[in-house]
Length: 604
Image 1 (cartoon, rainbow, N blue to C red):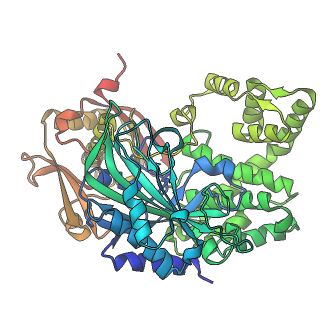
Image 2 (spheres, rainbow, N blue to C red):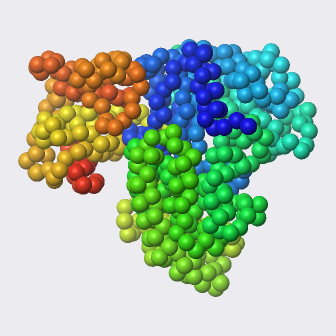
Image 3 (cartoon, helix red, strand yellow):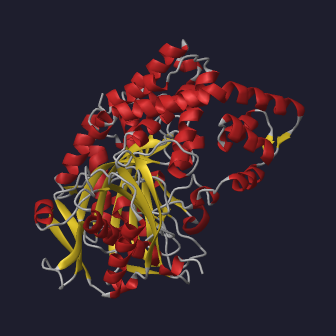
């Protein structure tokens, strides 16, 4: 048997032996990315470097990244899908290419993890007739053949550039870096012999890894050309890999799930064998909720954005607890087991009290109305074949039922729910989160648009101006940037006066008018802090970091602001435009929040 810790250690040590540097496990909650609610993959924090920015730790990187994928929430309940998971990741940023990437993956799987060749199969990009300039990936095919993989165990998947995405990645937005991928599969069924011919649609074949081969650039006219910097991105789920290595065809039988499952069995007085789906959903959702609440950029349950996802996870777990007839408040009991399993995450131990308090508070809030809500739903279901938007909104507003829960309950009774009508009702009562209206539960990668870039640099200027106007008490506690505004949280004991806000705006806009250069450099963390670079309090930085400096020769020290950051940034402050602070509020005791926009976003 191999444990999670052993798997992670083997992976990191193997790629360190191939001259890869271990990078920081990033927060689950991105602070400067308007396109996603959570970190969805190990590549997510690396988008600037995949686009050409120099990484301070070099061209070969490796890490274990915690991830949340909300697109899989409805899939949870089977043996392999999870909302929270850990991803094994290694990257080449313009360094080694397909042959080395595939050989490294193959060596790790077959030599280090000792996966037998008879249980191994791969897929390659099969081309897309609609994009003739991109051929099928014969190069990867030949490399796999040279490593001893039989032709029958290599499947070409076609038509992936557009709809199906089979063996194709990207671009993250409408334009940018993209390319084919090659995936690795493991035959999980120990009772049946491994078939000679590989069929990737057979559920007994489980994907355990994927090498993304970024070699193309897509432009605004949907033309594809070869990129100047070719990148490799490998991703492999810890949960799936751990299961197959230990001979399980069910991820929930491994050591990172069993203590949770056994606790659910204990408090429900039922067996996992009889209630697999229900127990998997409870275990998955509470684990994801614990990691979101325990994150260094922790958020709490709300009705919009990330907080809505968190609320949905906790409430869906409680509903399935009701199906198991669990009458006690149980979420904190399960949360304690999760924290015990992942003791190596310092942030979970540090924030344990917050995690348990918030998850218990949400359960108490929901339990007080859930029975009445279920009765109301049953009443509607008995008398009609569909539930209107107004009725769905009533369940949400009066009983706290997320629309997804109402839809799920409707499916169980073959009753349609008018989601569009619900959203119209919701808009009448409060402003919808932009991400929800656009599809909250879809994943994506960073948007480095012009507006986002301008607002990112604006955040640095605001940080410095706040310190100068309000004093040394000010310290960053987090930020969030969309294409519409920047939000900045900072330590300060009181509400800002109108005079202070005016001074801050004037100072920042003066820096914009001065048209100052923004310089980027890579330094050791010690060099960066010694040179005056600011960092976010409590954030763990790698040994080498990127530092952005707004050069100002009028200052004694030679700059206006200097911060540790990964970008993106403007090259000159004149690109930003006029800045205006539009809102301030209190986040918690001693922590304030401001929101700001730039000139072309001001209303006429």
